[in-house]
Image 1 (tube, rainbow, N blue to C red):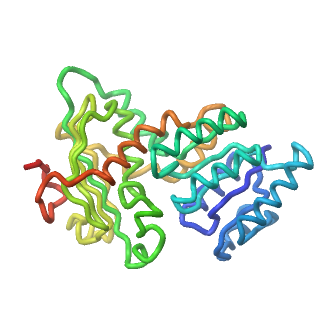
Image 2: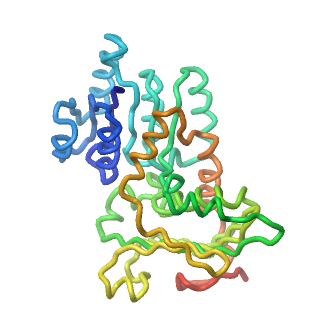
Amino acid sequence: MKNFAITGVAGYIAPRHLEAIKNTGNNLIAAVDPHDSVGILDKYFPDASFFTEIERFDRHLEKLRRKSQEERAHYISICSPNHLHDSHIRLALRLEAHAVCEKPLVLKPSNLDALSGLEEETGKKIFCILQLRVHGALTELKKKIIKGKKKKEVILTYITSRGPWYNYSWKGDAEKSGGIVCNIGIHFFDLLLWYFGKTVRNEVYLREKNRMSGFTELEEANVRWFLSIDRKDLPEACSLEGKTTFRSINIDGEEIEFTKGFTDLHTKVYEDILAGGGFGIDIVRPSIELAYSMRVSQKTSKIECPHPFLIFTSE
């Protein structure tokens, strides 16, 4: 049994990590979050130490590190806001623990080189949660995709509605979150890079706080994509059925169905990490580079309000 600690335990994604730690037969010894709404701990690890200050969390884990191999943290799961990932990964490695970090691993590609150096210095590993790579239907699709001379034509549409709270939280601050391309898009861009190879060209047609669209040419595919957190962009059918999320990947006119099978993906990623696998810096790097280029590139079109189901073309 391994000991885990966790940062950002009051956040939205933390329960999936708590469940994964529990499901894999491991123990949570400490948690930290500036917010104290963490009753969820009682469901999974009622004896875990809790801190609202990262400094006290750090000191506690350092004391345990000095006691024994059995008592120290072996892994630190990072569920804190995106701009803190780099710092909390460094904290984990300094405490001689492996880091298991939510997406995006970091916001800038330049941070990855420094983290790679720390891995070499400490002998500890950094893993990222890329749960779509362990989704059954999506892994089967990768096996079926036949690479050839003709590039695939792909349309990616992801709309997940968020209320006014979103823009008042750290997620609505692009400096802290990386914007929606990092918050909701990076898993899908990682998936497409996994399927179709490296980025050849990237264009952004629309960049607003709550929606983005563009065109990305990969080695084996042309991808037209649309991301939104505005419920007004949901298809009418979703609205009528009361659904708040729409995911669609269309490859050469064929719709890919993957609406189910999301419930235990974090557990599968944890199982892979504990078995000696996991998604490290080299695997994560292409999607971090692509997302960063989307955030900083100039718009290449005058399209003002594209519909998510249009095939976007630059002027």
